[in-house]
Image 1: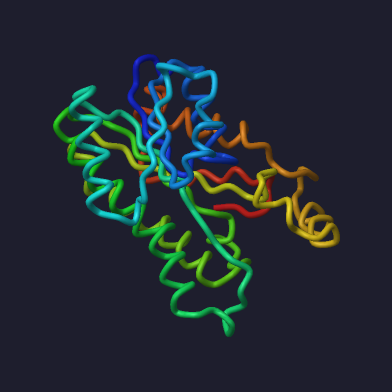
Image 2: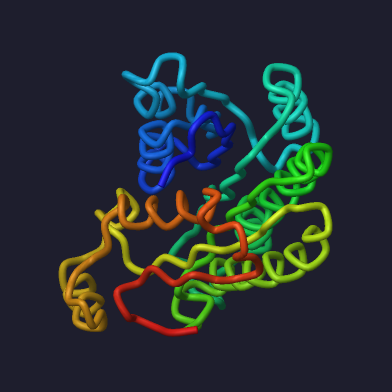
Length: 243
């Protein structure tokens, strides 16, 4: 599987799955725009990838910033082949403790940001008559487990995937969703051991996923090998839940 000379954007590229995807996509031959709000983290992501990965500090909830990002890519390359909507945030607030501010912030980053990036990317992809958009949902969208704001945003990603897959297919644009389960990322490091043990017990494969295992699925969906796959939600969760 190759991504030779494909132009990619990966949001939430400063750590975890986003960082691994940037590095893996470059290994497969892609030129990657690594997008995050944390400049220092981005510098770590693209270290050693000079000329193949470009750090872009961008708030994906800012419409003007997203439009500028896509305009820059069009100017520099004339096309965009792959968009990965990976950026996401959350909190541990219970439903009754969730403030409107927290709710809106999570929805804005996790769902509205994906909408803005997808809309502007699709405009660019339509001109070329091809492209692949890869959204990131969560196993919580299947099970309902997790904070309400996070689960709602990730459930929205499933709906966004299905709707845009149908609408954009005539333009040659494929839209799919990766649905990770419990994965070994920095976000997991603060979880108490007893919670972690219980979580792993609920995974039939008996372990956390690795970020490279998720990155490989995203790369496949972005590649020409997945040319007849669209509108699908691919669970990468060790068997925690099934579509």
